[in-house]
Amino acid sequence: MVPFFFAYFSLVSIAAGILTVALRNPVHCGLALLTLLLHVAGLFVLLNAEFLFAVQIIVYAGAILVLYLFVLMLLNLKTDERYLHTRYALLLFAALGIGGELFLLVLRSPFGGAKGDAPAEAVLKEGASYAVGIKMFSDYLLPFEIVGVFLLGAIIGAIVLAKTPTAADAEHPQGRG
Amino acid sequence: MVPLSAYVAVSAVLFATGLIGVLIRRNFIIVLMAVEIMLNAANINLVAFSHYLESMAGQIIALFVIAIAAGEAAVGLAIIIVVFRGKLSTNVDEMNLLKW
Image (cartoon, rainbow over all chains, first blue to last red; front, top):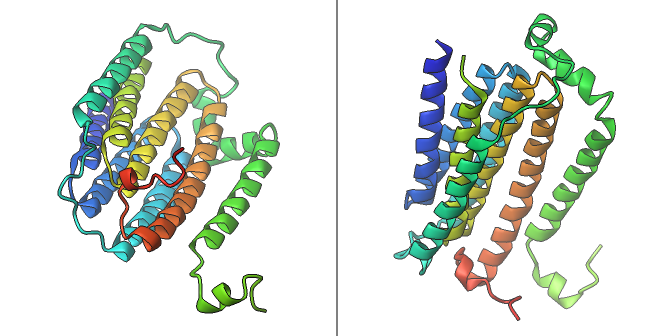
């Protein structure tokens, strides 16, 4: 059963990724990206990462993709006549070369390494969310705090960037109270 | 039982797809979507190694990657809105003001 679901999720996510890159209408690209994100979430379930599955659905499909679609609707883009780069054949060749080499190198490496302290049975017994939480708030507390500060900076940056300049701003550059 | 190399192969194919999208598309929003594809490929890799090497660290890093992706989307889309206000276009080839 697991190999069947793996084949389904991986094939659909690869097809959706190609459609995201290849479709002409940006809204259709966004919907193909949504398909990709949902099927990647399915792959997470196969890997015993239920908490990450929920986060992928809520944050990626629920928040980030809605942000993309919102901006697409806001800008009301007209579909370009030439939507690809002028030298797209050369770039496609270069990217396929890099991707192919990556693929070969990845399949040749032995994937060994010391096993960690969280075997699948232990994680299944106490739940994935519990295991992630214990690990995150003990060993990874400092990166967690740094990500919090990073998100605060991103929020402030986005607000400052997207603020509509008004006529009063142009007359009084130091701002009005 | 699905081998680890199958997950790694899927991740490599998705990463190459995202790389092609970043290189050949001219719409800024689609370029950002291709970056999201590449981040997802990295996430599949992290979670697969986390499962097969029986460690929790990969899943934690994947969570951080998702948080970074959210910040990147917010700031990138804000930049797109600012540029669109001045140029009425999201074509990456027309953004050459900072080129020397």
